[in-house]
Image (cartoon, one colour):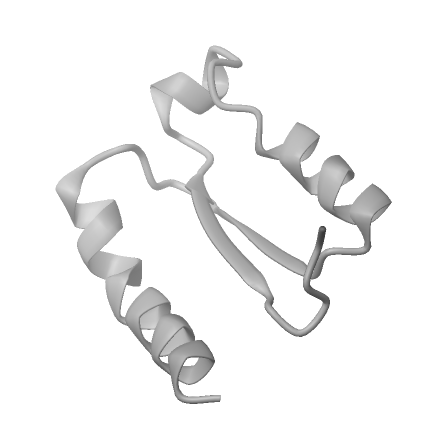
Length: 72
């Protein structure tokens, strides 16, 4: 069961080869969240791939996101 108070945060690089080859399908997950009324922030990041640089760039946002949930 979805928890409407718990936003799911996903970052996806649009230059990720897995994404471009349709091996990663965040849009399907987004549609499932909408059906379940589960809040989701799907952030498509232009120009980013599946590299360490991508992870390092957005890691702080995810740590902050999870810290807020754990502290609520």
